[in-house]
Length: 86
Image (cartoon, rainbow, N blue to C red; front, top):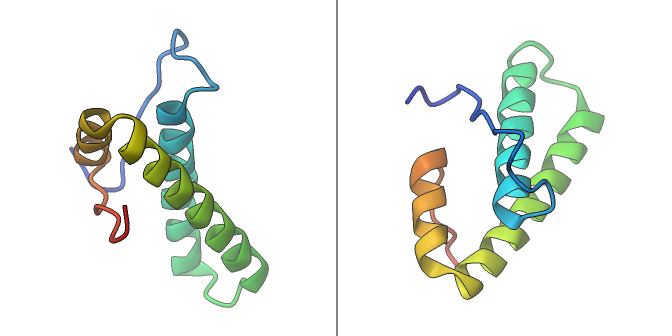
């Protein structure tokens, strides 16, 4: 899997599920990261990125508590680091 490629989600997936939300946040984070290569001083978008990162971190910690196996599979599939505090 290419590190910056978006993860595609099937329409059958539940948009309210924790996994779906984490995947969509990850796609938005990757899009914003590439945006910052051109626009380094876009501070408003940097603030938005920090908010998205925090939301994803909270969802990941919730998933780690409720479904540890699903958490491991998801972070491996998305190629993201494991959270320091679980």
